Each structure stands twice: as C-alpha cells, then as structure tokens.
Length: 261
Figure (cartoon, rainbow, N blue to C red):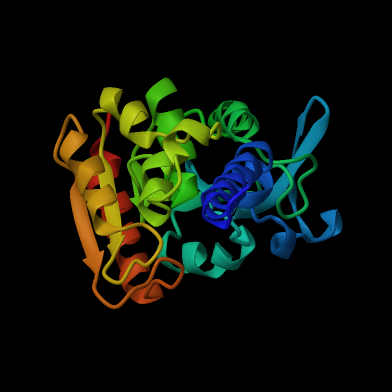
C-alpha cells in the first residue's frame, strides 16, 4: 500500500482506539475515588444498601434541621467538617462518600450514585421529620443533588461550581472526540432542575478551569426560576475561598432556604 495511504489509515485506527477506550473504560476515566479511601473505622455513619454499605461523617448530630452534602469527583468529603461546623451551627450535616469513595463499598457509576442518593436522603429525612432536608452539591455532586431535588421535597439547594451536563463539559474539553455519542455516564442537572422550584443558590468559581463558564450559564438560563448566584472571583474549581463560601452558605440557610414551606 502506498505510504500516503498508510498515514490516514493509521490515524483512523488510532482515533478508533481512543474512542473505544473512552466507551469501554469511561467509569475508570471519569471517577477518581482512589485518593479518597479511608478505613471504615474513621467514619461515624453507615447506611446499608443491599450489597454495599455507604459510610461517612455527621457534623453536629441532633439538630432539628439537616443538610446532605454531595461531594465533587475525587473529593474527600470529610475535609468539609470544620467548615460546616463553623458556618452552620444550627444544622446537622451528613457527608457521605459515594460508592467506592472514602470508606464506602462498591464501585461508582451514574446509576449507582443516583440510586444511592434517594435512599440516603430518605434515611436522613426520617431522622429529621420536623423540617425538609436541604442539599449541597459540589461539581459532580451538584448533579446528584439535582436528581434528588427533582424527586423529593427539599428545604433548599446549593450548587457549587455546577455544570449543565457532563457530556457537554467533556465535549468542550475534547472537541475532537464524539463524546456526546460515546458517554454512557449521563449526569444532566439541566434536565433534573427543570422541575425544581424551591430555594436555590449557585456558587461559581471565578477562575474555574474544569467547568467552563458557559456551562454554568446554560444551567442558570434553563432554570424555571431565577436563582441566587454568588461568584467567588479568585476561586478555582477545586479551591474555594472558605470564608466566602461559608458566609454564602450561612446566609442562604439562615434566610432564604429556611423560608421554604
């Protein structure tokens, strides 16, 4: 075969190999639980889920109002305990690791994370029956929190560095790949939030290098109501100013969200 024909053929083979890798190994490419792993003995909360046990931490147990925190991808959620204890003394906060993260059993996937989120919420709501439980979701956790908000009555919702859909963000980072066609891990808060009308705060990072601003803009524009939006100018996706973030949470949960019926 002439050399000039070998070059495009080699390119096509390499391109197909990359697409196949993305399609068949996308869970390993998307989720990063390894750095978050801790022994079960370091946790103080456990929720059996059939074949697995979800484990995490509870901040200020026994308060009448409660918040469930859904962390970002690769985030060790227990590192937020001091922030929530300082800024939300009137709430019990549940920081529970996803499957495969922290001390939780199993392996993460789109279906597993969404499937675990509702029973977790229901368990917490049963513990705090006087008030609707509120949600905070960061990045990937914003998608999980949005799913719960679409299925349950909640007290309020905070989305931190959120995106419209995982496929859209991935397509922005890899425009040369048919990501929208290959991605089976479908996290799409833009669809879930179409039916949510409760109190909503969005916290943006001014220098977000993971979620391009356009994807947060699209989410906001598609919402059925105007949310409260706070931008932290010098923050990056994984590094927020804790004082600004904590103050935003405290203001939201002691004013706006607490007026929810």
